[in-house]
Image (cartoon, rainbow over all chains, first blue to last red; front, side):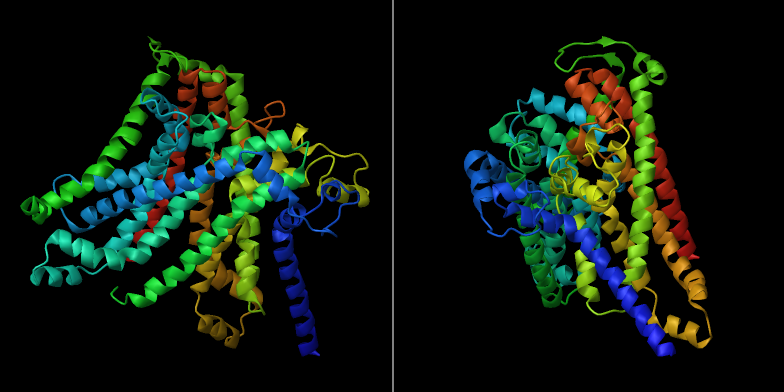
Length: 279
Length: 297
């Protein structure tokens, strides 16, 4: 008797949990199914969940009739450049501050932690004015610099703790065998740090792919827009005409994030198992 | 050249130069710059400006736009954070039990957090649409409302809808954090408790609550700090409307600086936000320090 009531309880629990999973993901299922609907199916009443005659015409219209392709390329350029620059600067800073004690390194350490807490709205107006002075408004390079500023504190903090966990004995033995400190950094420390660097790059990429406020302020002409502000301007133009096209845009914006997560996840596991050097 | 690089001290300095330049030019200088602008009377495209001392700050508390945004910011911050925490914790507790497909369920619950905010906005704007939106259809067949509701244009409903979208997007952050804490409880602790005849309630009260409490407080503070600064989801959904009902402080700053071109007033608002955030962050730091000290003792 007790077993049966336990079974019923478990079944009720299972129903509840999968119902929650379904409800949480329903908006995404709805977006995906709507992006493949025929034009009249998007406006059908009562609504249709899955198209009877799936089509990719929404995606074709998205790329042919709008500047979406441009936004997409811009976002990739910004994300790749920002991530590379930020990781380079943050890796150097993290290595320097985790290994050497020089004059002022304590204050600099503190400073880099405090800037993590500076709110973006405080930087918004001065950064806009600085970029305007350098003629870098409505320019992707200006956006890359700005995003480097936004991503640096996160990347530095992550890399700092990662560098701190790498044993000094490896680079010391390399130096005993005649390597310079710089050579030891390039050939011994960096390869071991790769998993940490990859994990950190996720943060930089996410910040770039999602950022909205600074892009809105810095970029004005349509051909310079990144995905977030580009799609948001499509929303203003297309909401009356075609929700199918907008849902297709949503799908395309999401795909690179998912691919990136899958690739990075696998590489992270390889990195962790390959480098058994962490103490 | 090689000798310079060989010297550790020089290497340490050279490695710090790029980050120091970045921080000094784009973080430290802007902080002083924004303070200076807030003491002036300056338009966005002005080359020169008058110094007006604290005039912008003195008028702030009689400024109805500011007071409205401050009120909205508090409503927004506390309700989103509250619902994120409640929903996130309940789902984390459910996902901590043993059941078939637990790994898949955990992965799927995190999806909203992974997708870009612009995509969340797109989907929910579609679902809440008055003409073709699914939600209006459901309300109709459930006989709750016969006429389509224009959610995002309604002064009463816009704020709750924006809150709902933000909660949907960010509750997985709470789930991840609480689940991590729950995972740290060793299984034999539950077994021992059950052998000793502890009831489910007692296990919850004496094992689960003490384990997740520190994480819960930390997440609550973090989410409060983040939500207080939130701009994108609100702006993309309503642009602060209707009738400024969803204009929070960050949106007011944007409007004041880049629509009304009054960067001095906008800067004084930004300083006030920063002060409120410093207060919240210091609470966070203090709590962190206390927690660390307790671990050390």
